[in-house]
Image 1 (cartoon, rainbow, N blue to C red):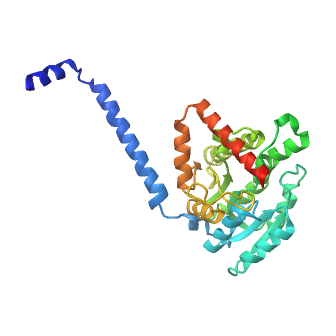
Image 2: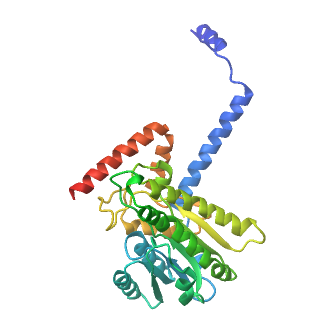
Length: 320
């Protein structure tokens, strides 16, 4: 028996040293990734309080009249920030501002602007807040409904409105804010975060302009961060993009679950990870796991799966 086993092992080639080294390095790399995952989602303490410095610190949140934006604004206020809120509907936004003010004694300002409108004077919009110490910005405004037909069914204005709401509005608002953010960075760190979307990766049908716009803000965050840190002396202003999956809100009436958190639960995850040091990350751990799984699928299989899911979502929307 032992001689037979010896003959078998004589036939099986011993892996070359290079292959052994490669396997060891790969195993170490995967172990490090696992430890990093556990640290990021389970152990890492919040660093959001690093952004409360200098004169009274303000957080600016766009799209704050409902959903994720409203919930994040409330979380930031409870953390000690004063607020500047943005929304399209003044009546709704005023109610949100009053509701948040009732939680404490800090300032809550707001401004009204339709993000799909290309004709805003951003310098004028920001003028009432030009002396504030804004240290956190969350570009949350955005969204799009599932189109029944292709982009050729849109008017030029309708299609451009989706792009402006999701991409151009945060870009132009950032341009107007940037000198003020650099001033705030003299006291301590400043961060502006763009709310991205998993659609930038999975590019579902019937969300063409929305998906492309979210891919734009992902690249924008990295480019702006490089601009501020690597061209000349670092300004202290950092940029990041958060990847968002399915979240339950008034505008998305899905059933809350592990992979579809409520806006309040998702907002807590966002605020917990502000200033985490990553320029692109997924705040909600189950979303990160789903993103990893979809990344393993062949492209054609992923596209077909996503298209089927979009068909189901569109069918359910028609029944409501």
